Length: 171
Image (tube, rainbow, N blue to C red; front, side, top):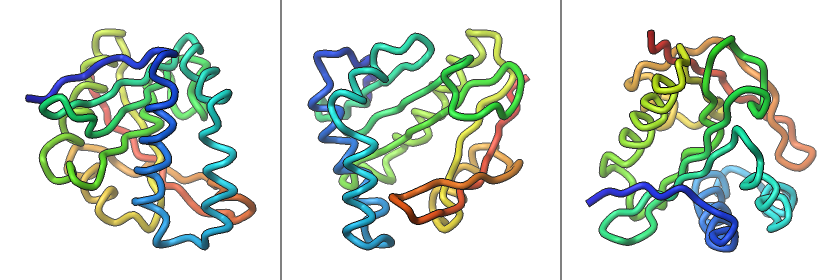
């Protein structure tokens, strides 16, 4: 059984742990260890995660599969979005699934949930950024109805990489 639970400040250590685990599993093989360490140290310190959890307009959700933490979703609305992509939209900033739980429909579940949130809030689209070389993720997002609309730079330490901006129209 799949369940979602909004994260609270009490969940910050668990959020840090799954963030580091899933990010490392996904991007570690493609980046030198010193660049990964620099990124993880910057992106996931407890103080920063606490601030993100307390920010109005940003919400984290833990995804459970049979009571086991399988992944998480981070969405942003309004001014909390990382970029001004479109009017009246919701950003999926993070959608991470633990390796053992991939290919079980959890990503689809989280995308569908984010789209439902957007519709409930009267938003007309959902957008996200995906690394240009993450072929499985790009194919999945295309299958889910996202279309590439642009790109932006993403920094792993001092290494500039490219994320594709993908958007899904809802209404």
